[in-house]
Image 1 (cartoon, one colour):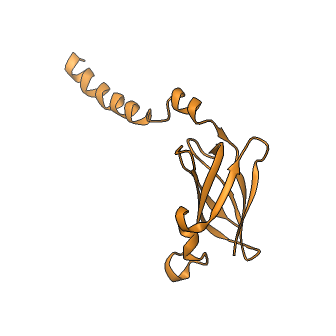
Image 2 (cartoon, rainbow, N blue to C red):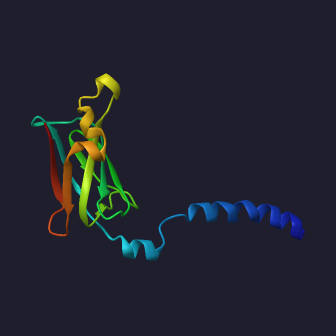
Image 3 (tube, one colour):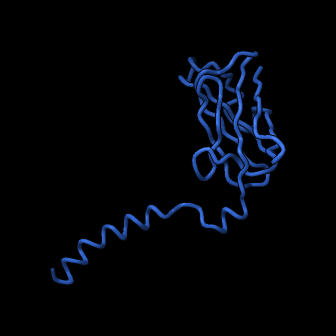
Length: 132
């Protein structure tokens, strides 16, 4: 195999490895350590069966997201189920179905109108988000 053939074979592998290495750097992880966050989402006391939940840090850190399944959720910031960064967060919740079929009132769909906040701390890992 000549050098050009070897280069043609190796180049796509190098490109894929570079693209796959876009995970947070150790420096980013140090500055935004995550804590486990899981819990329940209730609407008028009943679990929301399916949807999404997002936590936006008040200090401008990285957002955490999770799927709501059978009323429960677990958040992801950098890696699956790693939780959220410590501190105060604004919360947004959307039900599955969207539009008029979404059981979650529209005001909860974004951070600015939901009025929901959560303090993520090492002392607590499970949270109940209650929607009215």
